[in-house]
Length: 121
Image (cartoon, rainbow, N blue to C red; front, top):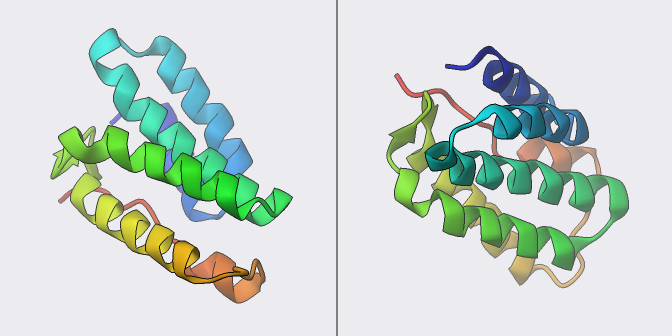
Protein backbone atom coordinates (compact mmCIF):
# COMPACT_ATOMS: atom_id res chain seq x y z
CA UNK A 1 0.00 0.00 0.00
CA UNK A 2 1.24 3.46 -0.91
CA UNK A 3 2.61 5.26 2.18
CA UNK A 4 0.51 8.36 1.47
CA UNK A 5 -2.59 6.18 1.18
CA UNK A 6 -1.81 4.75 4.63
CA UNK A 7 -1.56 8.29 5.97
CA UNK A 8 -4.84 9.30 4.31
CA UNK A 9 -6.60 6.29 5.86
CA UNK A 10 -5.17 7.13 9.28
CA UNK A 11 -6.47 10.69 8.99
CA UNK A 12 -9.85 9.54 7.66
CA UNK A 13 -10.28 7.12 10.55
CA UNK A 14 -9.42 9.91 13.00
CA UNK A 15 -12.26 11.92 11.41
CA UNK A 16 -9.80 14.45 10.00
CA UNK A 17 -11.55 14.44 6.65
CA UNK A 18 -10.12 17.65 5.21
CA UNK A 19 -6.54 16.55 5.88
CA UNK A 20 -7.31 13.08 4.51
CA UNK A 21 -8.67 14.70 1.36
CA UNK A 22 -5.48 16.74 0.96
CA UNK A 23 -3.26 13.64 1.16
CA UNK A 24 -5.55 11.70 -1.18
CA UNK A 25 -5.24 14.52 -3.73
CA UNK A 26 -1.47 14.00 -3.68
CA UNK A 27 -1.90 10.25 -4.22
CA UNK A 28 -4.38 10.91 -7.04
CA UNK A 29 -1.95 13.25 -8.80
CA UNK A 30 0.76 10.56 -8.73
CA UNK A 31 -1.57 7.70 -9.74
CA UNK A 32 -1.75 6.09 -13.14
CA UNK A 33 -4.93 6.46 -15.15
CA UNK A 34 -6.33 3.07 -14.10
CA UNK A 35 -6.12 3.97 -10.39
CA UNK A 36 -7.47 7.52 -10.56
CA UNK A 37 -11.13 6.47 -10.29
CA UNK A 38 -10.42 4.58 -7.07
CA UNK A 39 -8.70 7.57 -5.50
CA UNK A 40 -11.45 9.90 -6.75
CA UNK A 41 -13.94 7.77 -4.81
CA UNK A 42 -11.93 8.10 -1.60
CA UNK A 43 -11.55 11.85 -2.15
CA UNK A 44 -15.32 12.17 -2.53
CA UNK A 45 -15.85 10.20 0.68
CA UNK A 46 -13.52 12.45 2.64
CA UNK A 47 -14.96 15.60 1.08
CA UNK A 48 -18.55 14.52 1.67
CA UNK A 49 -17.91 13.75 5.33
CA UNK A 50 -15.99 17.00 5.79
CA UNK A 51 -18.94 18.85 4.31
CA UNK A 52 -21.38 17.01 6.56
CA UNK A 53 -19.57 17.65 9.81
CA UNK A 54 -17.80 20.95 9.21
CA UNK A 55 -20.14 22.79 6.90
CA UNK A 56 -23.52 21.33 7.82
CA UNK A 57 -24.35 20.35 4.26
CA UNK A 58 -26.33 17.14 4.46
CA UNK A 59 -27.64 17.09 0.86
CA UNK A 60 -24.24 17.97 -0.57
CA UNK A 61 -22.68 15.26 1.58
CA UNK A 62 -25.26 12.72 0.40
CA UNK A 63 -24.49 13.62 -3.22
CA UNK A 64 -20.72 13.24 -2.78
CA UNK A 65 -21.04 9.99 -0.83
CA UNK A 66 -23.36 8.58 -3.49
CA UNK A 67 -20.91 9.56 -6.23
CA UNK A 68 -18.15 7.82 -4.26
CA UNK A 69 -20.25 4.65 -4.05
CA UNK A 70 -20.77 4.68 -7.81
CA UNK A 71 -17.01 4.88 -8.34
CA UNK A 72 -16.24 2.15 -5.78
CA UNK A 73 -18.60 -0.46 -7.26
CA UNK A 74 -16.04 -2.01 -9.57
CA UNK A 75 -13.28 -2.16 -6.95
CA UNK A 76 -15.01 -4.65 -4.64
CA UNK A 77 -14.12 -6.78 -2.77
CA UNK A 78 -10.63 -5.32 -2.22
CA UNK A 79 -8.37 -2.81 -3.90
CA UNK A 80 -5.08 -1.15 -2.98
CA UNK A 81 -5.11 -3.01 0.34
CA UNK A 82 -8.54 -1.68 1.37
CA UNK A 83 -11.60 -3.78 2.22
CA UNK A 84 -13.74 -2.02 -0.38
CA UNK A 85 -16.73 -4.35 0.07
CA UNK A 86 -17.00 -3.39 3.73
CA UNK A 87 -16.42 0.30 3.04
CA UNK A 88 -19.07 0.25 0.31
CA UNK A 89 -21.61 -1.48 2.56
CA UNK A 90 -20.91 0.85 5.50
CA UNK A 91 -21.10 4.04 3.43
CA UNK A 92 -24.25 2.81 1.68
CA UNK A 93 -25.89 2.26 5.08
CA UNK A 94 -24.70 5.68 6.26
CA UNK A 95 -26.19 7.37 3.18
CA UNK A 96 -29.50 5.54 3.70
CA UNK A 97 -29.57 6.73 7.32
CA UNK A 98 -28.90 10.32 6.23
CA UNK A 99 -31.67 10.18 3.64
CA UNK A 100 -34.13 8.76 6.19
CA UNK A 101 -33.46 11.51 8.74
CA UNK A 102 -35.15 14.79 7.84
CA UNK A 103 -32.68 16.80 9.90
CA UNK A 104 -29.50 14.75 10.45
CA UNK A 105 -27.56 15.62 13.60
CA UNK A 106 -23.87 16.48 13.41
CA UNK A 107 -22.79 16.06 17.03
CA UNK A 108 -20.03 14.07 18.67
CA UNK A 109 -21.93 10.78 18.71
CA UNK A 110 -22.85 11.01 15.01
CA UNK A 111 -19.24 11.73 14.12
CA UNK A 112 -18.12 8.51 15.80
CA UNK A 113 -20.79 6.42 14.04
CA UNK A 114 -19.35 7.26 10.63
CA UNK A 115 -17.77 4.32 8.79
CA UNK A 116 -14.04 3.78 8.89
CA UNK A 117 -11.70 2.47 6.22
CA UNK A 118 -10.43 -1.02 6.98
CA UNK A 119 -7.52 -2.71 5.33
CA UNK A 120 -7.98 -6.05 3.59
CA UNK A 121 -6.56 -9.08 5.33
